[in-house]
Length: 114
Ligand code: HEC
Image (cartoon, rainbow, N blue to C red; front, top):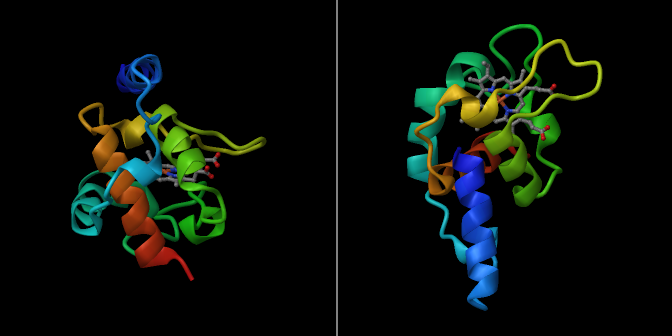
């Protein structure tokens, strides 16, 4: 649902000749991202981002991916080949907005990046 809205917003902005929705167009709020992480992501990813249980990877190991790729994988859900557990779309929280997903990416990079 949210993904469809994001795609529609992208298509609409293309039609209107406005810049495509991209990270550069958004200010990312790390504090908001922390709130999102602690509310929706921490149960699986853990306080330190290393995974609260088996099957959840250390987030630090995924941060070489671009913000846009992480955005897509968080919004739509993601499963690596051979993985024993998938990342649910929006971490299973259908109320997350696109802005909140952008914010949580900024938080993850700041908190768990090298
Ligand atoms: C139900 C457990 C669960 C929740 C809740 C969850 N994740 Fe995940 N997440 C996973 C698992 C499992 C993976 C690894 C999936 C794989 O690679 O197969 C993952 C992978 C990821 C990745 C790496 C994606 C990639 O491209 O490699 C990111 C980033 C991520 N999660 C962010 C989040 C954020 C942000 C939230 C909260 C909005 C969240 N996760 C909530 C289980 C969860």
